[in-house]
Amino acid sequence: MERFKLTPAVFLLLIENKKILLLKRKNTGYMDGYYSLVAGHLDGDETVKAGMIREAFEEANIIIEEKDLEVSLVMHRFSSDERVDFFLTVKSYCGELKNNEPEKCEKLEWFKLDELPTNIVPNVREAIENYLNCITFAEFDDRELQ
Image (cartoon, rainbow, N blue to C red; front, side, top):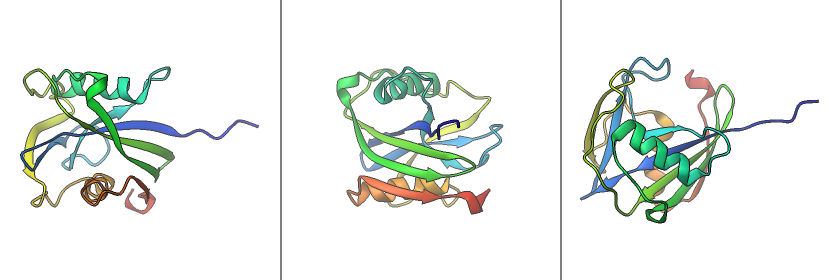
């Protein structure tokens, strides 16, 4: 019998001056036209922080040091498969924000934390709300949304 597997992903809660960086998805096949966070799956044989560092550079052109990252929320998510999402905050970063994946991201945009867009990926909206309410663990079922 094959063992059960979870898909791990990392998400960056990049917050500055009471604003959060979101990206608008396109051509991905999942929630295109909706806002999400800089994010991605772990490649395997990769730590959560190393995966976040890689994704931040690949998607947004920023360099983050491991010591500046903190896991702020873990979400067990039921989707087409089961996932564990790690939401990380960052104390500081280097580099100029740039959309490095224009084929998958329409744009990067800052939003006030109390004025998020209506078209935001549902688990991302819940994660941001949980973060703002100091909730560090959540479960989310988005099977009915697919």
